[in-house]
Length: 184
Image (tube, rainbow, N blue to C red; front, side, top):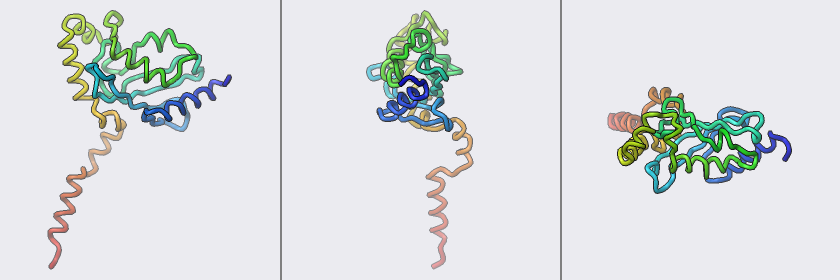
């Protein structure tokens, strides 16, 4: 596999054949979303995030770009953009790594072992260093607020357009009303 495009295809197929839900962004194989679950035995357990992955033309010789779509409270993740500050991905990437490594090793390690001395979210870093139990509670609050399965499963654009559609309950209640007024 000398060609970066063949390697990209192989790594993407390997990720799709694993237990990760992958959603392509466009026709190419360079941008996609992956559903990522918080690691067990951590304050992130139970959280589900939609991760945007962008593979550069030079992948696997250049690292993928990784970002959280739904909010996460973490010293090494920018709260507004979702950008990840991850040395292994950004600085020490090697063509030996693949996309499954990102989701099975790198991201879980990032969440399990935050580095408050290299923050993108200064407030989270300060709180973590000052009061770890309050930090853990804030992480759990963010998980409950922003990292439910439905938060990771829908595109941001779909949320605004679905406001116009009827919910299942509203749809069912309209059917019942119509059915209740039938002539004898």
